[in-house]
Length: 103
Length: 271
Ligand SMILES: Nc1ncnc2c1ncn2[C@@H]1O[C@H](COP(=O)(O)OP(=O)(O)OP(=O)(O)O)[C@@H](O)[C@H]1O
Ligand SMILES: [Mg+2]
Image (tube, rainbow over all chains, first blue to last red; front, side, top):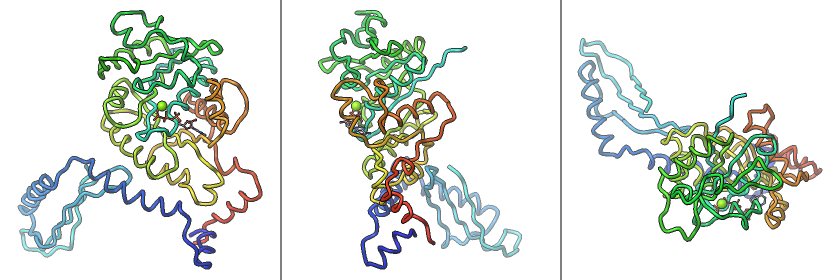
């Protein structure tokens, strides 16, 4: 927060329009950029199933908690897979694991 | 010394942000520094670069005529009288029936880059065929934008396309910067735009009515040698293109009035 923002707040004035512009821009670009990446939801689903099958060969996954999504930041889109592990096949209980793959 | 060999696309996505004005002024400034420079008007639907350079009455042939073997390249090039290191080549004219294809543009830009140190390509607005043609002919790009929502959004689309076409480097120029409005936080700041687009900042150009006056005369600001806020910015950008180690002009330092200093103080981050 800047000195100006503070004064605006105290006086009950609107925030400077540049801040509004920045926030609106960040939102709209997040959408634009995902649209640009050609990964369709179908493809993402297919990929998700294949990833799960591979991982399930080695560890037991909590299928209800699995989340695979695309996240965009700084013009880089990352495939983020969160696969909570219940236990390894050998029987030990393991902690939650996060797997990250860059696109 | 080895010949510099750079072909730079000047593009924006959104129309009217200042591509042609930048191309004309950089063309003159680079030529003035001693580099042989060609400016290629790839906007053949709406040709303007000739007007800004004051060369509208001297165009006889276009790049299309060169490709069709109606004339030689040096016949189609229009040399600037006061700045003989600069030549203009219009890609075509609005009456043209056969529009150029990406391969045609590639051929022309290859011919030009054999002869010139710098080839600047003034791109049409939009992300359609005209832009794609110009893109095919370039190796690096300057993305021009204004500190406004719609211009930045469109610039982002263009950057997305440039990235998939192996254009490198892609640098940013922010045009029509108003220091007082920025200090007032009523305009996206240079830092905002740069970080949102995540591009290296090549330079900024201040809002300046001299730009309009010089356009009226067909004499780019960098030609007259007259000092004006925008002309200083154009020279700064041309130095940075040539690899000189000069800092980007800081809009905060360009406004020296007491009011602006006060506004700057108000921008101090308190938490
Ligand atoms: N720094 C500036 N200060 C004031 N006016 C400017 C500045 N830069 C550009 N302009 C004005 O903005 C208008 C558009 O400029 P210009 O023709 O260079 O844009 P463009 O991006 O080439 O447009 P188009 O997309 O139609 O080709 C012109 O009237 C020009 O004089
Ligand atoms: Mg133009």
